[in-house]
Length: 302
Image 1 (tube, one colour):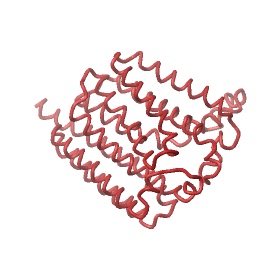
Image 2 (cartoon, rainbow, N blue to C red; image 1 turned 180 degrees about the horizontal axis):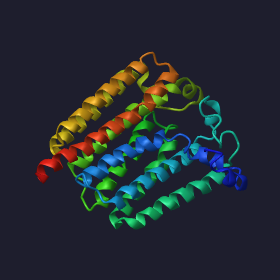
Image 3 (cartoon, one colour; image 1 turned 90 degrees about the horizontal axis):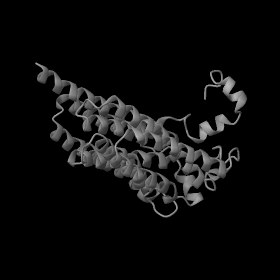
Image 4 (cartoon, rainbow, N blue to C red; image 1 turned 120 degrees about the vertical axis):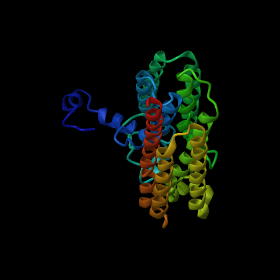
């Protein structure tokens, strides 16, 4: 949090920086990774021209739900985070915020997110219940399965059908191609993230796809990325977004190749870099969607 800008607020609420960090507002990569596929879906469901109200509601919803997800994750992992070098200074693990206080904060974030649903149709509300259930379930999965990244992928993809429903459309093949592709992409990049913590996770008894895949981790990541590109290639055929979308898929493939090179030696810091790099993948695909619809609109106008 920029302390100079918020100095008066910090003077009155000195613990605000801890709650800011608990919600991971100081690390917005998770917001971007959740936002990009949601924006793809909002634009595609809106045929390239979604209502501004829908767009703003989904952006705000992404920010609040990602924050809520981080809070419930840290509540669930409070006995594990202290054993992992990268997480031991998180506010709950370090004792700066109590679990009960975090739970109240979590409920408050959910309430704010729920208030946004008043601006959408009733069907979107029912789908939102699924989003809350999956987001709340995910943090506990790493205790029982080596596939918590799959649950995270479902949580990060749930806004996709919601974007269609919010615009009065029944989720069809286009929706589920985006959903399936994003699920594969999320598992791939979160495996990079888990590779950075693999040694600490093994000691703490935390499960992940990085541990499950073992020496085949990079091969599995590459396979998942290929499935992501294949799903979007099928989507391109259905939407006819032309060369901009095709160029975005090529750009994503080149970015994936760069990530593979970064993580080739499986050094934790470089695996984390590869994870962070996926922000650019999401942005490139979004640019392909936007410019694809713009190029479709120009001939129609002529």
